[in-house]
Length: 243
Image 1 (cartoon, rainbow, N blue to C red):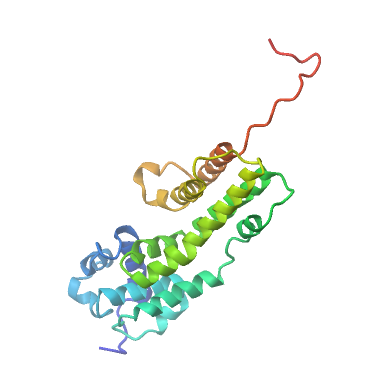
Image 2 (cartoon, one colour; image 1 turned 180 degrees about the vertical axis):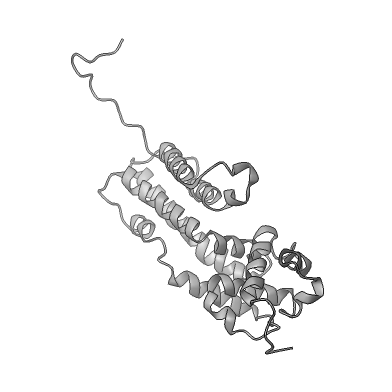
């Protein structure tokens, strides 16, 4: 069947696989789950992919290099694990990254700390929100693929948490931010709070009433309140004292 013309575009198959794997993870999802999402029989899906591993290759390719999906011959074969890792590593390297966080972690600025922290929160939120489908897919599947997990969790996410921890530690040491029991846990708290509202709330039925502007504003407000010391009250203005 290799090289034949598919009755359904491969992009449709890939989109369904992306959604199923993002919702269930690679291990829990099955070929039949993707087939059901497409309205196909279990056997019919093998017209398009040779295996579940091939379906993951197709899903990741759709997420990371969408223009290449239509170049594949069917049935799509599984890719070597290192190729999946290389695809993600290449994608993340092409992103704008988190330049504000990197610069703030590298040096102590004279700017007001509330401005620095607010910009870092906004940058993290924007990055996760913009790439939430890709990040959710990779996060769910990385646990089943050691090579991908090494890149995603160790080389990328932990490095970002370390940068955020360095920023928090330096500003706490300079007495610009409130001290915390553990800086590493505080950095994780910031990232996980942003990630839930920017990414995971979209799959939570109980959070359907939370729109994006409300989520962004609330996350920023509460994280700023958690870390930025309250301004000291100045002297009372004559004639404006309150009883």
